[in-house]
Image 1: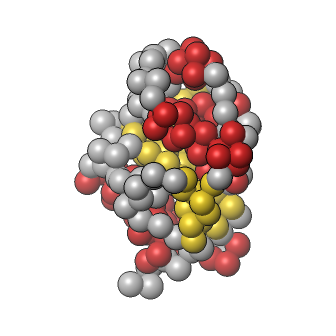
Image 2: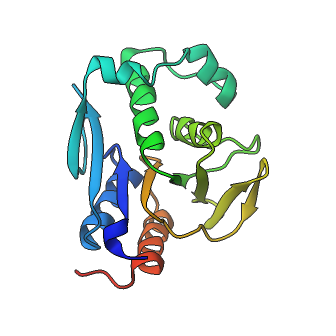
Length: 185
């Protein structure tokens, strides 16, 4: 794929999202980072500041989020804004790449799991690098299949854990190298 056909969307959070952003920079891939008032980013490409009205487009009942993830988060304003902003990250790309952990119930651990659930809901291609298993999995036919992810083609999104391991960092670099060849830097 040509680099000029690719565009990364993320939230710039500490950990996996920031590493995806740094890799995009090294490979000269355009990047859009969605943010909102009070959001602290570790890395940013072209920043799109979401207004309260834009964030509201991604609003869902927290009970719906809890039911889809099988667990609860603190009901504070901060997590609601992250949940809302994740809508913009996921729906801006044709596929979602995640670094984190797949739980025994087939959900992805933590708030990152909401991005994975949105990708399923919006019929986006979904690939997760499980940091414990040190392996990529792709969501196919309602199950995780151990397989290297498809290469990003066109606009794509990325999210993941704040607790990025060396294996997760290497998986991101490998995805970029397989997709776009050696980095410019």
